[in-house]
Structure formats: C-alpha cells, structure tokens
Image 1 (cartoon, rainbow, N blue to C red):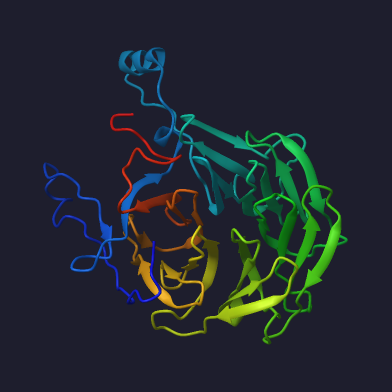
Image 2: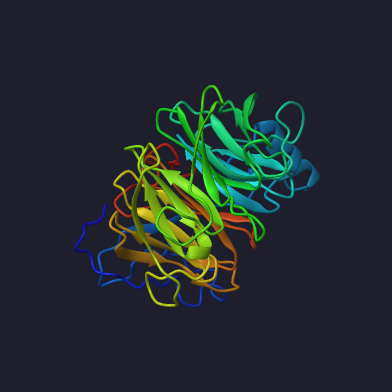
Length: 358
C-alpha cells in the first residue's frame, strides 16, 4: 500500500462545493490525498444505525407505505472501541453497555453483552481473533469477556486479581495470546500490559510499569497485534507508540508531544494493517495518522471540525483496518463510524463490500 519513500501528504476533504445548497448535484466522495498526489483512500460510507445494514422485507416495506411511519432504526449511543472480521463490524458502546454488531454481508444488526451470561459493566477495547472469537474489555468488571462471532458468551479472562483499570485488548492471529492494557492511575505504578493465555485464561506475565523509559508506560490506552505476533501499545501520556515482540521484549518506539505532522497531542486509538503500517487516532487533532513500521509518517486523514461530515471529527476514539484494507474510524460525538477503502478497490469488493442498489 505504501512505500518507505512516500512523502508526507497533507489531506483535506474534496467535498463538492455548494452541495448543501444545490441538492441536485451529485455527491462526490472525497479522496485522500488530493490531486496532484496519488490517491490512496476514498471515503466509502458511514455506519450510524441498523438502517445502514439491514434489508427491509416486502412486508416491512408495505407496512411503512401503508402507515406512513418510517423504519425503527437502532443505532449507537456512545461508541468507543471497534474491531472487524470478515465484514462484521463490532463496536463497544459505553452508554448501552453492550457491543453493537453491524453484519454487512449478513445484512443484520444486533446488540449483545447487555444481558445474561457475559453481561458487560463498561465495555471499552475490543478485538477479534482469526477464528472470529470476540474479546471485549469490561473495565467495570475488571476482565475480558469472550463471545462467539454471533455474541454468545464463551468465557471470561482476568479478574480483580490481575487487572485494575483495563482499557484495551489485543489477541494474536492464532487466538492463543491475549494482551490486556491496564491503564493505571495517578496513585499507582501499575501502568502495564497483562498477558494471558487466550484459551485457558492462565496469567502469563506482566510487561512494563509506570515511567518514561523504553518499555515503561504512562496511562497506556489501547493496543494492536500485527501478523508476526508483535504487539503495539498506545502509550498515551508519553505521547508515543511502543512495539514489543511476541514474548514481551521491547523492540521500538516512536512519537513525541507536539503540534506538527507526525507528533501526538491526545493519541488514543491504534491499529496495524497487513503490511505493518500503523494507524493512530488523535482526538486533539481530529484525525488519524498513518506511519510505516519504522515510525515515519506517510499521510494523515481528517481534521478537527464540528460539521457532521466525512473525515470531520470532534471526538474520534478508535480505528480498525480490516483484512481488505478498509479503515473504520469511531467518532464519538456524532455517534458514527466512517469507512474508507483503498482507492483501487471497488465498492463491492472484499468482505464488507456492498453491491450497487443493495
């Protein structure tokens, strides 16, 4: 997708001028970056409610026509974390205390984790293994709750003995190793990553403590694992990303506080794509920046603005890159998920692809 020699590219929206006052003009999806630079991504769609994935039956359509009442769309209240697996988009919601599932290929919308076994107190970070198991941080319950792809409770990992303020979770590709970010607080040195056997729940090791040296953390938030089993931690109050090997050995760090491109101001969400590029959401900047594996900035998308438009953000929280390279960005303030796809990919390609008219 990217080359190491790619120059840093400033990105702005390419929305059609005057579209708000000229509804007869067709909406033109913005591309990133703008010409004359080679486009890399294009805005595809926004997920807000069940209406964005569900298909109405003939009976439902007739009922709407006969009664004049619109469809009952269910949506997001305060989204936080996001994960994707084969076209299924999982979003944690801290007001509904549940996981919202947008099943794009299945054309279904559902909610789980808000009742029965596996009930969530305050869901935050989320990840999905290659076999589709869903791992959700329950910050209030101080554990990670594991579900089937459909949202049926399987097991829980962690507990108060091991976790104080869990916020993020990442599972390796094989679904065997679980990395849980324990954020810590002002009065504790337990700013760390707790490692578990993802299948048995057995505690393996602790990585890090509070500090600013390599391998230490200051209010870490979220994490991601790459295809080689290395894991990346958003070390938020040290304004950096740290990379560790599968056994927890420190490898590399990049980032610093600042207001320039490539700096961090309030970094939050993080993910790694199939080529090892690192995506970081910055709430203060209102964008996400893309770095290569050496920490060199490749480009950024979005800017801070109060308009509810694609790539305009007030409170972006998390980011996910799926198997096909589609990017999903959580915007908390407007309660939406922006979706971008690689520029060379057609809209109906990939697991989350949607055919025209569907």
